[in-house]
Every structure is written in C-alpha cells, then in structure tokens.
Image (cartoon, rainbow, N blue to C red; front, side):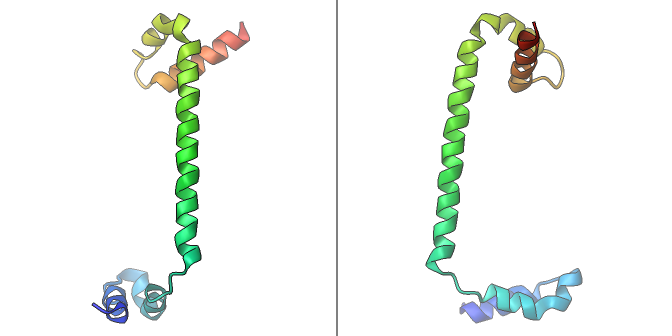
Length: 98
C-alpha cells in the first residue's frame, strides 16, 4: 500500500474528537522520516541500556553490602508489599540512623 493511501486509511479510522482532525492526521501520517529521526531513538536506546547496566551494578553492590543483613532482609520481605528494594531502603534508613 502506498504511503499516501495508508495515511488516508489510518486517518479515516479516527474516532471521537480526532475524527474532526482527519486532515491533520493525514499530514502527520505522511510525514518524512529523516536521518535525525532514526538517530535519536538509537541514542535514547543506548542511554537506556547504560542506565540499566548502571542500575544492575548498583543492585549487585547493595546485595554485597547487605549480605550480613540477609536474615533481616528475608524477614522484611515477608511483609505484604515489601519487596527487595523496599527492604534495602528500610535497612539503609535504619542503619544510617543508628
């Protein structure tokens, strides 16, 4: 299906308040994708991967540092709604305050 025909078909499926904006939808759906449009999502995905890697490194460090408190961690996570991260936070707050 040609790009223009596809844009027409999609715009015609609009409902509700968008139905009155079908002309604008057609223009938007026929838009041009430039190299910049391809570049930015790649960069954002790279950033996301770096953040995920850093988060995993921090979680591993926290697990190592909290190893002496493992029994208390397990007890805290038996409380409904308290997961590992919440237990880490509670322990960090309690230990820092002592």
